[in-house]
Amino acid sequence: MWAIIKKEFKSYFLSPIGYIYIGIFLLMCSIFFYLDIFAYMSTDFTYMFGSASTVLTFIVPLITMRMFSEERKNGTEQLLLTSPRSVTSIVLGKFIAAALVVLVSVAATLMYYAILCYFGEPQLGKSLVAILGFALLALAYISFGMFASSLTENQIIAAVISVAFFMISWFLPGFSNAFVNFSLMDAFYMSFVNGTISIQNLVLLLSFTVLFIIFTIMVIQRRKSVK
Image (cartoon, rainbow, N blue to C red; front, side, top):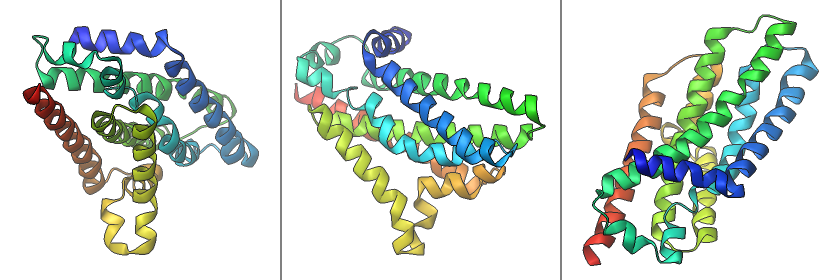
């Protein structure tokens, strides 16, 4: 699996995708840092992540849309599926590689925390909880984006499916309170942004991630059996 992780991680930076993702993410974080924190002379680091979480809806599909769609389009999927590696290791390898790209960008946001430390005393514990929640939300988005990519050979369609799903899940609680406990964005906002870790919201984010990794394995396994 390590070989897959290494290959996939390198591929993000041998193409513009990885740089575009990190560039857009840090650009938006810089804007939110100024608008939500610096402009108000605040030291609450969590405000920036609260705003930046909305950006994930549109930029995570940039790195997930090509995961399996590109393999099918280029005709390399058959080579991948007939390799001695298991489907589980292939899916997990691709997931971990994408997760590393996201975690690198999240780690880069610590420079904003360093700026806050220079001007004030931000709460370290609250900030770390917000970073943890943000990372878990990103991983949940990656798992669904990967699943969407496994369904089609068209990268654009995979990206559209992902964005549409994220937006629908984002706005569903506004139509009915019954969806509040199933909203990934609400799970992040209602606890992690406030500096608290809710077991219910933690389980929701983790179980969503695991569920769609399993769904992706099932889709790829079925395609392998057909071939």
